Image (cartoon, protein in one colour):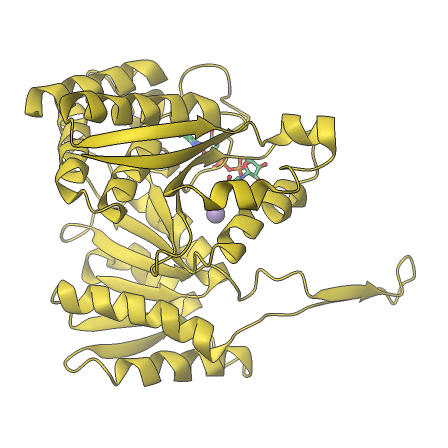
Length: 355
Ligand code: NAD
Ligand code: MN
């Protein structure tokens, strides 16, 4: 028996609503399989906490989280708090300090999920997004404020090491899964310093992987290709900004944000990894119990894989697929009229069926 220590951060808006369903699923697994046990602690580090304490987490927040095997995160963002605060005072410190440099985002169309486009085959690819540097930097500044000459400079940070550790992870995945071509999202024709280093670093890493080709595709063309022939992609490596945009687009192709998970991975395992849906706190639907919990539950499956329990991850994925195919417990974003908790309950029921 192994007991994993899990830090749970429900966050804001629909975060707590969908995390509750994710926890329901994890609890069901611990009941059905005595070899998998969890010791969980929930942290209320959200916008409400910020309004009370003027910070998103306690000073020793990272030290606290560091002791856990994984972090299960909902979403943050609240109209009462400036947009950049939850991102820069909570999410970014976790991703950067815990070296969660791989943001893994599977874009996979589950059977029975509608896509707004008619693809010529199954849509099933992985985006490996650089998660610790890149365009999402707070280096830069503004000059001549409140004059007509006001200007802003925002620096992008690309390091060879940073790109290569991401690329290595993506190529390892490609090798394991017999993928022969990795698409590199770039814009080195226009962004000549940082993106050229990016491209060169990806290429250099590729030399260690015989039989895997790298295709550089400019980001503007790539978004068009993703709409025109999404079925032709298997593995895409992308910078922080490009990966962010590609995966919201990818999510839209395979059922929307309500079903799209992500993993912020620290491959070395020296710090906890974090699992969260791609979506945000969705203030427009908060409190109505109509948020789709599938993205959060799928994120739990990614966490199980990361913890070495592929068997339990497939139980969860099978349960999700069963519930989608039955169509009776789907939330409005998927064309149903079920409540958030009903989708969660239906998935739990399918889990017990399998175990
Ligand atoms: P959002 O992802 O919260 O919502 C976009 C749209 O998708 C909304 O119409 C919403 O109702 C819908 N949606 C999202 N998740 C859904 C679900 N599970 N089920 C059904 N529908 C769902 O993005 P936004 O509106 O741009 O941002 C809202 C807040 O979330 C902002 O404060 C933003 O900064 C924050 N945000 C946080 C994260 C994060 O926590 N990692 C990510 C993105 C946005
Ligand atoms: Mn995003």
